[in-house]
Length: 566
Image (cartoon, rainbow, N blue to C red; front, side, top):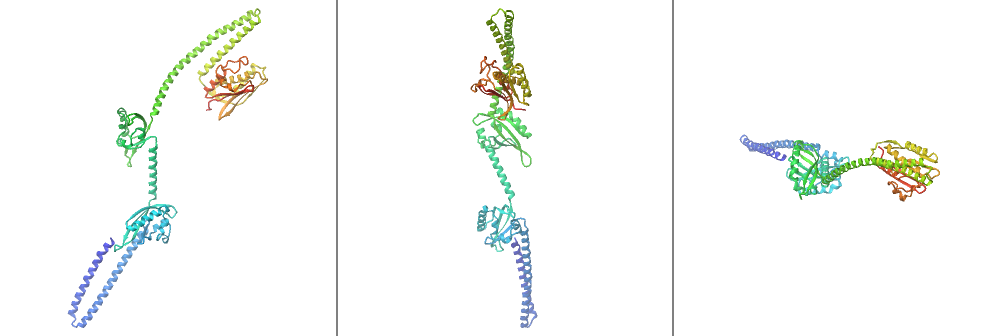
């Protein structure tokens, strides 16, 4: 552009000079010819005139050249100042391809001197991984005289490598002769990091949508699919391309589409998130699948509603399970009602049995007592023993009936859980046992401060049975030792009753808690075989378990747990 502007000015000045010089020569010669009669004088004046013209021309050329040089110097200084103060790093290379100029911005960026950067010194700041590619791009462009643009990492003055875009293009002198390359750099690290973050985000989104067990989709404001994840092939048997451009209603039966169309129209009119919307879709093979749809509205950059983005989850198995559970619940409800009726009948039966069994037993016992009182003197010893046997048998039968009735009530009674002081409870039970048999030597080792959460009445039955068992099976020991305490087994509070009595064979421990199962005969130890069964039932109702350890002749230990403390 500068060259185009200079050429007309030079041509105009040359033309003007030629016109003025020609006029001066022509008219001056005419005037001398008219004024000078002497040819020698005329020649002398012509020479003087020539020297005068030459002098004037020299002065004019000097002034013109000086002016032009000043203009060139001012123009060069101006452009040099522009380059030096330009906010981007600028470089220039000569015809040999080496840098012969770098502006102050470049030097401030790299933190190096001009001498260090000139030539190929600038390449020392390029990241080693980018250097070969960078030099190849530069040299190929230089050889072909084509502009180039390349990205590489350049070391900043603080040692950090920054991504830059380096753009260069060839430049030419006033004679259109190739003079080298000039270029500039722009720091694009922030843009590069944003691109990388966006790429990672897109990769994570793609991996998430393509590997999740749910079908991810997006529809526009007209409810037509604009994105469908590959998971749809597993759910509905379609390829994503088969679904793009369709609506959700195209994948439903007509009845289901008619049911959901008003709801979706409302969502489009008033966009809001949708959660857990159940809908029945048709697979490609015509089979049905129940999906659970959740989505959120999507808005464009200007805040206008543009559609929905969401997921569909196959809940067919869950729905089938729910149907089975509902059917099971209905069956359980029916059975519970039948059980309630059976329980009421059982309770009524228990009262009837209690009355109908106890009445004849009472009559038998009273008859035996009357016969003993009235005819005691006339009866022989054998008859008296028979009478006592009958009376004892009726008494045992009465106790068994009482135990069975109590056992049946345990299963039906409501639990009233509260803190219970087991230590105080066993102390009272132990005192009652000793009071009934003051002649028996016994040592009770009862731990203090043992608390439990449970039904106080039922826990009293448990402790009475366990302590009663220990008392019964230590009757043949010179000194009975009965211990109660609490320990921790496998992280659970565990209560125990230990004795030094008859014990039992561990191979038969499985029978201990079964009704009417006894490990000893009634001749050895009295009982009716329902006590430990009652203990097991009560402990299970409290959410615990009971077990026993023993050795024949060395005693036994009964353990039980309850539900965790609240």
